[in-house]
Picture 1 (cartoon, rainbow, N blue to C red):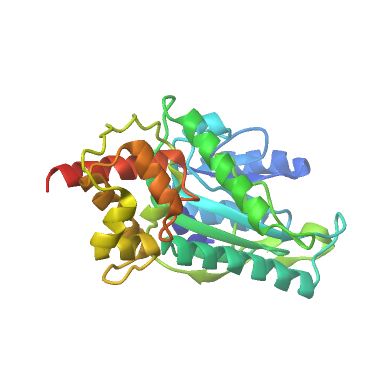
Picture 2: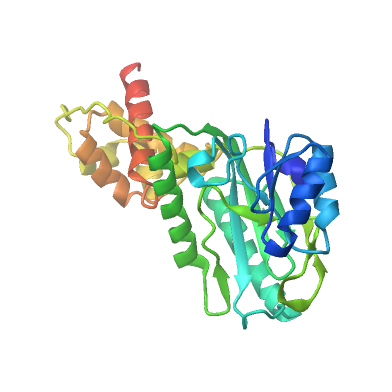
Length: 322
């Protein structure tokens, strides 16, 4: 339980929620006697690791215990009250009859789906899963990213992009056997690892199978969750050679465009090097977009428009200084 609290990295307050309405009165009574803030709908708002553990232990085994994945403002429970985003949460759940526990085979299928997602992000973006947890029937994956502070100005854009990201994962990885659940809302709650899952009639412990340290800055760049980027400056190609002619003369340009990342730490770094070269040669934004669409390196084809604009702006700035 304490490990789960530490995973969230909340700075001020964490929401714990029980959804069994029969126990809401007990939650309120427990919180009052322990000087913990709460509401009347089964949520407690704790400010320390000790309080988090105390509330979880009190209701563990009596009902499922959930926590808000991303931090809310004081007593907040809704999307509009989430103030900081640090964790991407993914839930892989086996398809089964309602109110039944997953079989071991179904649990294994869900884990394989989760592992496919982890492998996808590791290979595409060198992004490592921060934590992987068994939920009692399926598998959860957590990716930690550098904190994104949410305000009234950027929250709408953030919600839209995060929802698009979720839809992409669902379409790409869901099957008739395992579904990637629709959990890509800001105020998402998740079962606390270290507590007991009682869904489907059986009691099973939810636990971590993997926890690593570090942040995945590349995921924020990939998602471009909170930002409405300005249009980057444009530049017209002023040279006399076409791109096809430059490919013949510039070996490095040819290798990068053809998919070679030799000499670079990652394919993302190699992709950026190609972008800088195109800006250096003076191609317009429209021409750069067209060329990058055909390149065999990096994640340009799958990337959001915001990611492309940010990368182009940085590349253009570097090219102008050389």
